Image (cartoon, rainbow, N blue to C red; front, side, top):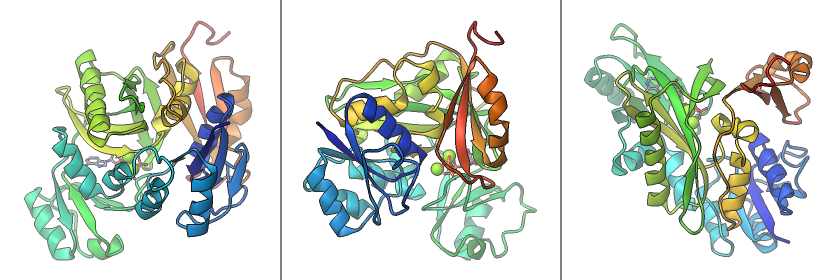
Length: 355
Ligand code: ATP
Ligand code: MG
Ligand code: MG
């Protein structure tokens, strides 16, 4: 029986382990935190740091393939594993996605536009970069940011930049030009070991307090914009020689053109709706790809809205459970905290609604 190693034990790893189990695969989670969401459903957990040499050696020995559920897996760990076992997506996808400066250059090299940007390694760099963008921009840490953490927005030239470099930790930063987008969309796409690619319909994403709130499908964009997003995803996958699922976020402008924001070399929160509204979910698609199986059908059979249950949103669970049009998915986290993703619900716009 094939054994799949998964680095990272959060809800994405949990949902990957569930999809793997349905296809008769064993999963082994590498995660330092005991009793993590993924370990509750995986075959086994190795409780160790992501770069622990003994743990990596064990993973390479007992697994037929290793994948990951977050983009901050140490590249050195992925490369060490790749000496003895296939690692999918390839470590160079991690390298391209871990640093926003490297990521934007890579995306531009694929012929896909991003916001304009400047590397910011000092307060003086910041002031020069802001002057170039007319005082507007989004300052971000180059590494490790998520859910809008490690960011500062400059809305106009009157917003003071004083002390902002130190405020974000004095680490390497990037200043992006401010994009006056009409809406945000994302594409989930997958590439198999044989080079075939599938993509899902783009989702329209709304964020609250920097965290994804809802993904609605179909997005309110033209067919041409949707095709452009899917083509950009395919270009990124083929350039990387990628295997697995990727999530790519875009800003859609009022003229229908797209600007890529960032990419995640893994299953993505804005693709959770696929488990309810598609034949094959993003999770199964990823497992199929890394296990060298044929990709599944990514067609969507229903319009839908996925909502994250964040912190106290979980208090509404009894109401969600009563709804006949909604699929509830919880992550096994017992303690709710502000900003913590506890689960998600996907409401289908089918004829079942309201009955
Ligand atoms: P995630 O949790 O999706 O990984 P993140 O912390 O990596 O998020 P981004 O996706 O870069 O952060 O930014 C978070 C949000 O901030 C975006 O979804 C968008 O709403 C807004 N934003 C980011 N960059 C820009 C920009 N250059 N111009 C305008 N808005 C932006
Ligand atoms: Mg991100
Ligand atoms: Mg984002």
